Length: 290
Image 1: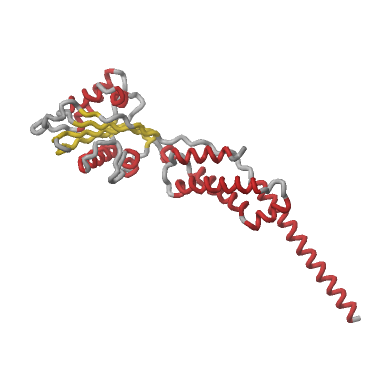
Image 2 (image 1 turned 45 degrees about the vertical axis):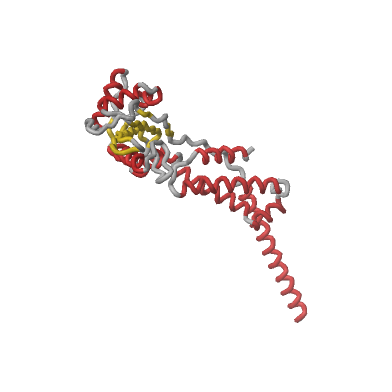
């Protein structure tokens, strides 16, 4: 009697173990099917980035002439003469934007401070692409004219109008906002006026960043899904259940996708605008979908 009871208990124990094993097996099977269904994301859209255009530098002839004693140049006068030229070709007047005025002043002071007449700034990295976010101006397109050596607002405008690339900026009908600044002081062996004028087309946050909040969440989820698939336990289970799909080649492809998405999402996580390098990564990611 006791032996029968023991045998019955053993059978019940075996049934329980078998039941647990079956539950685990089917749970993992369903679990792996879910993983498998997440393994084929659609190609990512290529974002449109905010554009920046930097024309050549303009040095007005006669730089060796000292500007000491010359008239003070008011940036608003400079903008007035430019709008006069724009009206002649049917382009609407540029709107003066206070944030762009501040950004232009910062750029002009940096050029004079470091004796660096350039669109680039190796000292503080205060360039067009960085100064506009600093003053809180979001844009879809921005450009910068910088000139040196003019003795009056008309002199600078005349110099820019005789330069093809600068003239295009001055007269472009698509540009709407502007800001300008003039600084005067010693530059190398000269004492000069330096002018910086910024032109821009304003944009919303999504246009400036190159992605929306919804797209940011999509990248986050996609990165999590790929990490989920690559988890050692998940991968081991799927490689047993779906050996034809979960090959070493597939694993290498997923790891590459994860590396690319990690770099792209890092930019998004910090609310930084996407770069051309990020766009190249997105295109590379899409190639792995083939």
